Image (cartoon, rainbow, N blue to C red; front, top):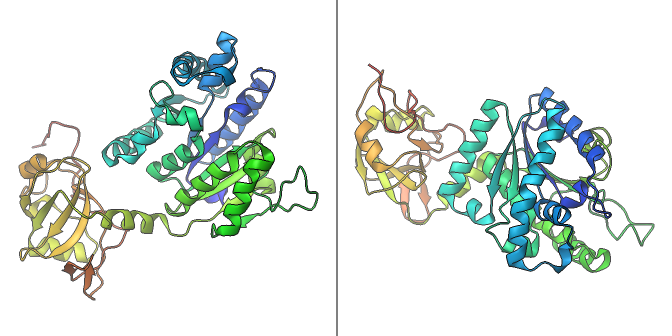
Length: 396
């Protein structure tokens, strides 16, 4: 249902889905999973896979017990297992003519906006090249991920960065139940959750002590991130063959619905910045164009205030220094100074990543600045021509 309507899908799989209790690789399961991915590709969906298993694969290679590993040794084992893990994906997916790539991330990478923007561009470029990114936590340098196994939250951050419509968390259960289904026969599967209240939190916390896995609490944390990012999230049984197909056809799982749209989530993030790094001063024509939902042309930029880098938060001011928009700069202040005032055929680029609308009622930004027009998250400010790679180039 929800999955079929999604254009970008992030799927998280744990190490227990790749390696069984006897330390044998579940090759048959992975082949069936690859069939699911192949079907999604045929439906023109963009897929990102977040996978655990580097340490587990390393332990298998070295024939050692994962439980006895200390943090520093875990990092070394992860570096060995990372190659084994990607080889496993490469060999399996190649049979279905699926191209894959690898991206190593930590939670720290996702929380610094500039690094997150770089990751977003990498995802977009890989999609354009026809490759599926397989994201792994960078266990060789990160310690918190190894210690707490917080891949669920990492997956939710990847979904947030990539602008995914749905996040699929494949688990060893069908979803969130009212009680432990292994103990209570009358336990019911909760099919849909719109609000994570105290009762849901209690069920998730209780599952840690009863199941002994501790996995449901981190999944609820991931769901909170998704709900505020405009992304749907589902917890489903990954132990079944063709788990994605089962979600689509049977829907025997738990869906967490977003509280806001992706556009609203983006707008809230943009306007929440307390201290923008700089500002662009634009002329009346550019201001009017923005209020009508049109593009910001470089010709309309009259001055750059402050020094900022790519990805920094900046304001857009009119000639009276009144704020009329906010955004994330796609280029540094130096680069914008070089292209402002230029016209038509020169190869210019998108100056900012944000949106405006033409509402006539005035509003206050954080109780400080008034704007004649409301921001919305639909029409990104763009120049008419795309700025290509650095250094800045122009066409005659």
